[in-house]
Amino acid sequence: MDFVIGVDPGLSKVGLALLEEGGRLVKRCIDPRSSAAEEIAALSAGRTVEIALGDGTKTREVEAEIISAMGARDGFRIVRVDERNSTVEGRRLFLLDNRKPWWARLIPIGLRTPDRPWDDYVAEVIARRYLSIKGKTA
Image 1 (spheres, rainbow, N blue to C red):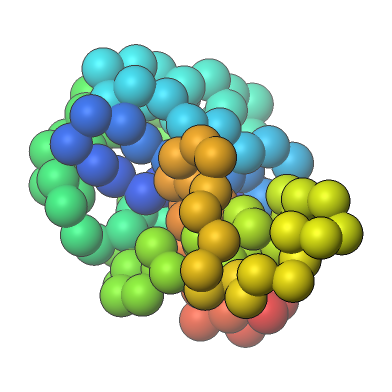
Image 2: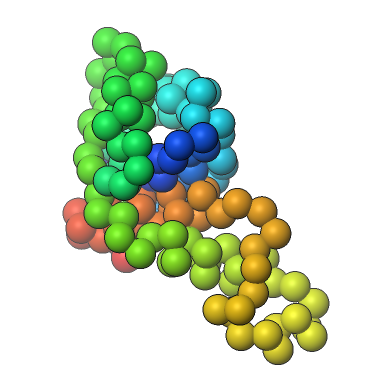
């Protein structure tokens, strides 16, 4: 494995995060569910990847869509990862990455509201959990 793609499956959108094996973030994005599998196939082109798929909402359906989009391509493997509390962790990571003006920091992070969906950060959490399980990075 050279890369891991974290996938946060959902009903209408899918969060994606591409990380190198050592944990360096390469890309984060949120795609409509209808095109997410094709984006995963594009991200994995020319790479040996493991796909860390969150085991929550719509996992089976998204897994089937990924397998279909990947076709007969070699060099990938899908692994389900426990995504319990990943939404909370992803929200916190998003808020820490997207800090507002100094005065907004007076509001505790638990009371702040993200200004956009953060499924891509949840996908990063899922990918990092997988790498941690594999003993590659934390």
